Image (tube, rainbow, N blue to C red; front, side, top):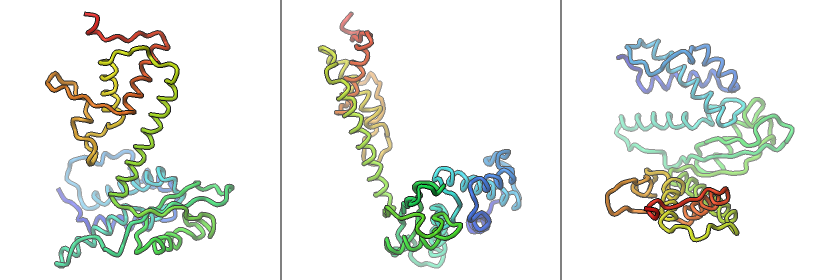
Amino acid sequence: MNSLSFEARLTAREEIHREVSGLTAEQIHQRWVAAGGPEHQEDQRRPLSTPDHLAAVRRKELKRIWTLMTRAGWETYSPESDPEVHRWHQELRERQEGGSGTAVGPDPELISYRIVAQRTDPAHPGAALLTNYVYGRSVEDAVAKAREALEKPGGLYGDQGMYRVVEVVEEHWSSEFRRQEEARRRYLTTILENATTTVVGREPEDPDADLLSRLDDFFTRAVVFPDPHGSGRPRPHQATFGWTSERPYIQHASDAGRALALFLLAYLDHHGLAVTNPRTER
């Protein structure tokens, strides 16, 4: 099967980026439809000519940009704010360095920053918050690049002063992990507080200890630690349901899991649905 090189695909994408720069999501969607995007199955396995490959690249890239803009709430498209564009250029540079025998790796002087800008004029029809990704040697350099590319008539930020930068965060896999972990902890804290507050004064009388333990184990696996592939948390056997007849019948517990277990028992009791342990009735 004929195939385009990475460089050829990147060149084709760059032409598309220049074409759609400054366009709205609706305008880009129209181009994707005109390219036959909705009718094509891009995973078809058949020999493709170079024009066919280029047409497929166009459909995929227009769809990707449209999806990105829709999810991010962008008014117009800017390649400078597209993280995938930066990634492809970085990969090209690494390929070129690898071919020349020089050290391959990210430029130590360039750092990826996530820049969040807030709308200053409530009457402005744009999004209240805009998030963009920019490479720079420092926070100041990244903000300056963002303003140069986006703060102009027809730009994403519009006229000067329409948006003000409210947050600049260095993008790195460890910082992303920390944000996810902090979000997870905030979510679990909310669960624990709400479940505990709701059950106060409605605690089930003398709940079956084994049933409570089983429910705690269930909620700990299903809600508190649901991801079996999370980096460092938890181990696979902690995150799966573990319905097995093999010893040692490992169970797991957590404050949030127990709070949800008591919440469920209290809820069922409140609605007159008695919960018993079948083994105690044999």
